[in-house]
Length: 348
Image 1: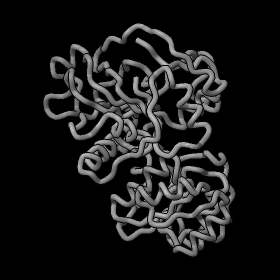
Image 2: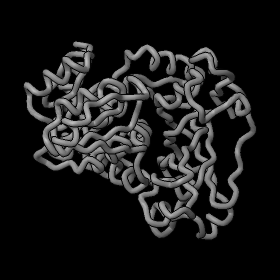
Image 3: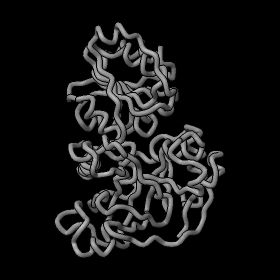
Image 4: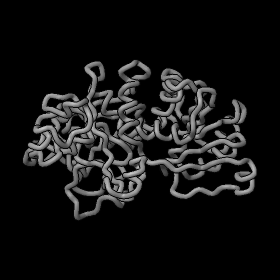
């Protein structure tokens, strides 16, 4: 089979197509014929050498978290009815259309026992979707309804699962106003659509007039055209005091979000694209009874709910561009340029 492997950490030019042996499923495993794999900033950080998760020893490395495809084979124990929890009583069988939940958990720590699973002490993520076939744990597969396309499904696991879990962590209510700085990235777009699907109102920000129009098209109630955190805070207050801030940027946007957020408001942080440290004014923070909440990915139950929302027509994930496996380097170059709106999807 062909794979798109990272041969170094010099950016998109380090992505090369290689040939490897086809995987064989072992106990509790399945092989997926990959039909779509969306890419994320997580993957870009790896190929640019900004992730401690992957070192030189792992090269050449095949990334890709968000796998959608058809089950080609399962391990013997799965064939005999063991090892599969999803997809109904019959479990996972060859020919099933599936999407992978990329969470990897130990299953034994207190957080795996008590939940939610993304609190696992040994939490990690699946990699290997940028390939013609992927080997994964069968228990992590969610069966897709026929009405949900592979392209839509591959958009869900990382960006939408993260955004959905953030909204849950922020105790979103249907009457809430939600601020989403940098709303044109993967998590930002997902948050805008999910806020609308859940009956709340959103403020999305972007520095691009063209992307501002796209945000309105996917349901943003208010759009602020600015990339400056202070200006965003001022313009947000003119609209209203947000109940929830979805912060996937970090850096200066943390302080700006707190300054615009209402008393008792909730900020949920999942990323550091704009900076790994944030400086805040402590007194206004505690005097206003505000909350700052950390969140990473989501749960498999979240992914199952998202598949149901897409099946029911609540939203359709926008896809900016699709690429052949041989064009994976171009996909990462387009992501690095920040010109895309919606997901970039590799279709092996």
